Image (cartoon, rainbow, N blue to C red):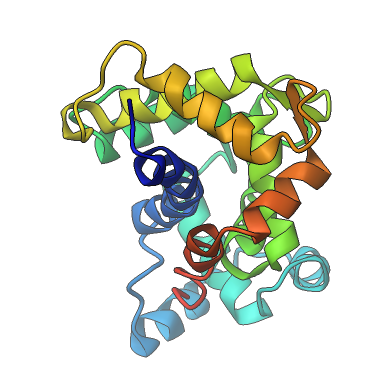
Length: 232
């Protein structure tokens, strides 16, 4: 059997993976390690491309400044000239980040969390709205976004089958670097611990309120939510 700390650690890992995933997208777009000089260069080029009205609206809707949005938009358009990212491209990006595992299933779930309108493509507006929450949102906003990721069928609850799918997807993505080495019944053990902790009324499903309450009681999860607060 797993030690309690090891099993609960996957819950924190799940949060960190969500945050790291957003950072890997930023890295892919070349937006994390920008020096001041490079920012100025990007802004100069962006001025002829962006739509000021759109950026002003996004500035009001997100936690990014207009200057930051200009840089994000330029990077997004450089890598995605069509202005949208489809699921296949999303999977190809994550395959590069996790070459020793199979990230396709997790990328599928993450893509649908970004694609809030369920159009089959992620636009710049979708990308930057999610990024704003994951990097600069409140604790409640970050946890709500994560809950939505885990709620695969979007019925407002997390059931054991959904959590099992998420756990397996994380292990598949980590590949040979999974430690301890995955045993056949390990995902089920993690899911059982998750529900013991999160399912307050023991009805077999985890509601948003239960998820929020349980996560906020966990110091490790709360610390993980603050890890990438100042990456941009």
